[in-house]
Structures are given as C-alpha cells and as structure tokens.
Length: 79
Image 1 (cartoon, one colour):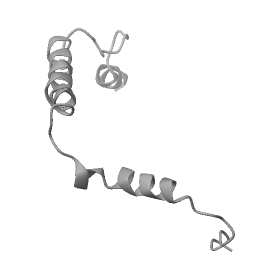
Image 2: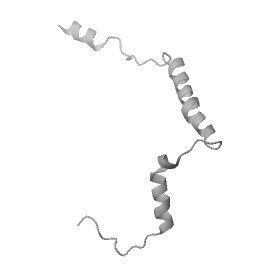
Image 3: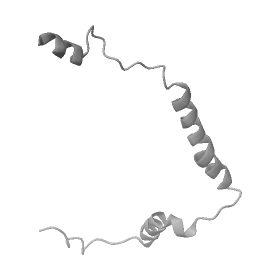
Image 4: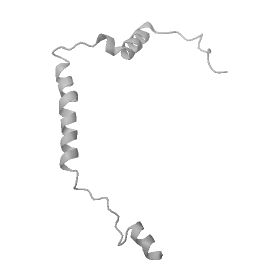
C-alpha cells in the first residue's frame, strides 16, 4: 500500500549525484575567497543587525492593554 511502486521509473544519474551532493554539503565545504564574504555576512553582519534592531527598538513598542483597569484591578473591585 505505501511504496515500492517506482520500479518502472528511470533514475537520472546527474540528478541523483546532484541530490547527494546537495544533502552532503558539509563534507565538501571549504573556506576560500568565494565563500568568505558569505561567511562574514551571515556570521557577523546579519546577527549584528538583528542585535542592533532588538536593542534600540526595545522600548518603542508598548504592549500594555488599552483599558482603564487591568484585570487584577477589575477583579478586586468586584469583591
């Protein structure tokens, strides 16, 4: 019921090799002139930008409810 029905399909060796290389990129990664800018951007610039955004916009958004009394004050007034 659940599989083994692709015996008639032809496998393209180029696609199979590409899939295997895509799934195992960690085995063949090397630091060189081509990969260094990407490493610097993804490892330093993006985290630094996120940190800057988080730190300097921390108190600009107010999540306080827009009601006169909080739920605790309203509950205490009922008693």
